Structure formats: structure tokens, C-alpha cells
Image 1: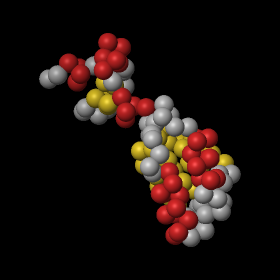
Image 2: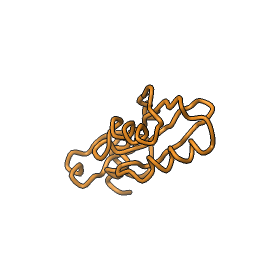
Image 3: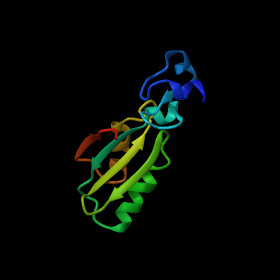
Image 4: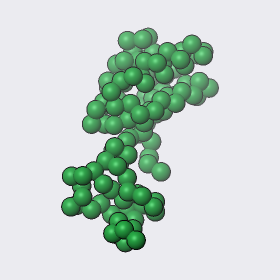
Length: 113
């Protein structure tokens, strides 16, 4: 039994924080610093109307630094983005989409599950 499994789930271990080790509430392994800081936001893109729009949005956001995952939902005209807020923010994502003629009309922070 490692010492990490004896600490209650969900605790942040201050002495290990500089190493980027966190506990994942209920998981059997510690989270990396990268996993612990990923944020999910939903962007509403009303001008998105076809598969080409979907592809353009995904190709615009995916290569940006800090973007972990981009999921485009055409029927709801929404884009869900998992990203590291230390590297990129919603304004930068919105600006990148606006430059491709896909302005963002609203954003919604998605609660962590």
C-alpha cells in the first residue's frame, strides 16, 4: 500500500503540490498537475450550420496552446472545449473563432464532474 492510498480522497497534499500530485476523489491514482487544472467551457456559435463549419471550428481551436479537447455539437450550435486556463482563456478562443467568421455569442463554464 503506497502512502497516497492512505490519504482521504480529494485531499491536496501541500508537500507534494510543487511536484504536481493531487488526489482524484475516489480514484486509485493521483492526478497530474495538468489533469487537475483542466477547465471545460461551452461556447455558443450561432453561425455554425454545416459539417464544414464544424471542421473549421475544430481545426481552428485544436492547435492552440492549452487546448486539450474540442467537441463540436452542430444541432445545439455549441463547442465544448477542455483547456488549461494557465495557457489560454475564453477570450482568446473567441477571438480565434471570430477571425474565422464564427463569432461566439455566449459562453458557459461547465461544472467539473
